[in-house]
Length: 192
Image 1: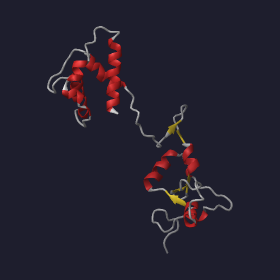
Image 2: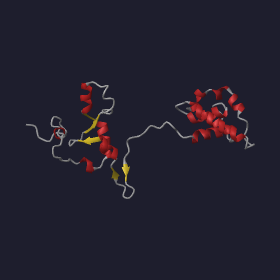
Image 3: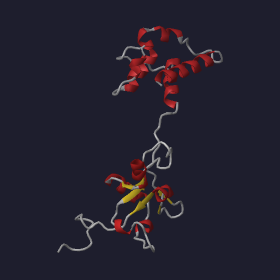
Image 4: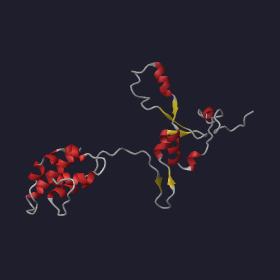
């Protein structure tokens, strides 16, 4: 990725060289051995000074104050967008008018909150390629699984109080799972 960014920046400088006569030639900068070594670009600490000096072709203890084409390369590197951002599912929305918390609708569609605070979900891919799966695997795919504590806390933050209230339905298939008497913190009835 760094190589493609550097080559893009070099290409931009070479293209602008035809239009701007003040830009010094880029070839001597790339001819040095330190500028050709792209492994220098990846440094966890002091990355920017090393990168600036590597592009400029200067030793690490000197600093140039005049803007050259090689420093414009660094500006091009800094302004290129980072393309490898990971998708983020921890969306917590607020209303524009009053600033109140809003519910993330994807949580309501994909998960169900039990009365004791746990969240359940279905197993992904439970309807795909059923011809390939054996009987006991199909039975496991019909079941629901609990999310872990960290995910349950996150899901609680992503919904409002309205969705945390207990709901009572006629012939609810989840009725036996809404109580959890064997655990100390979720027990409703006192011990005998």
